[in-house]
Image (cartoon, rainbow, N blue to C red; front, side, top):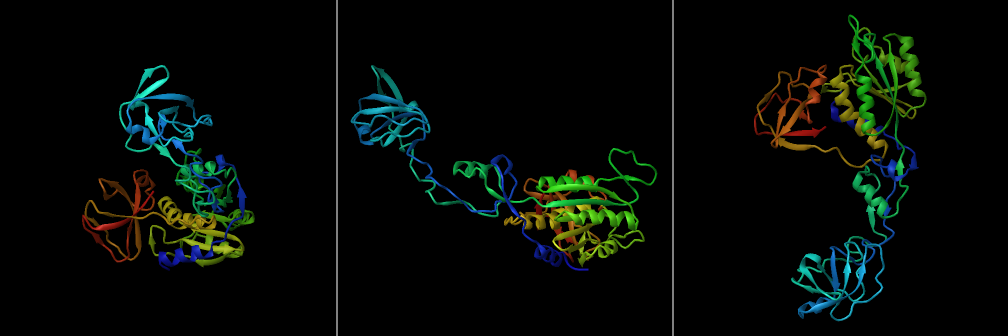
Length: 392
């Protein structure tokens, strides 16, 4: 049995880069950028008005009086006239500031005096102008390779003309659920049967990541069925996720079948709770995770081990967010020989464990907002003591 830190290092150390592809902006959210993005224009690309108002010469404001309106400038229009003494142009937010104008007086600080003239009732405290290039200059780096594209990034990509950004291909992940007791969700379980929740849970986690999920269904606890479906998973996928059949029971055949299929097993046990009987190996360029059959174990191990691996394959450079927060109550546990992952809620800036009955109690995670890390050797955490929490 190895520590979780050792297991994580082995997993991440095995990661291989995926191919790259160009996608449309509509397909880009959630994808990992595979190139640096530079702007091809200044931002703003011209001096533009920050408000609706009147563009005029700054020094004219020191001399009260009426200003003659020489034109109206809408956003997207090029000014036709320069601004002279005691002249102004009516201008809309985002429109190009005309030559000669040094500021924009807001509409709220003006009153029309008739005959195409306006009087200003207040002097602006700022020019109300966004100057060309004050945000970015042409050639500036705007987005770095390795980030996972969010909505704000899409706005930047669109603004700099990166209409088809280069991104990492999505990993192809096969999901295999094992166990004679399993039936699919549409089937009412008979005596000694349970519905297959792990396969659908993992598929959901993959789609949120995102990755391409291929649910290969249920394999029975016997060699022929298991070997056949494992061979299918190894055939045309980057990663194979199996749940169940990895412990030490008489019908836990997964590690042996994986070895028969030519998978090099890199570890079989991890000092973590839940998730001790976790298997990791590879065959060529395909990687295999054998996760425990209990739904909490498979959920947690995906989040803390599989997900970082898939992100690494896609070149994602950001590290998982971990908060340090105070405990809201005293917490104790009986055994401390393994690192524990405990479902918690975060309320009023403090951490509270949710009611949790063990690795089969997946319902606890419907209430959880994070996973609290309890280190090996720790049996008690007092109220107010700082703990590490990974948000969900």
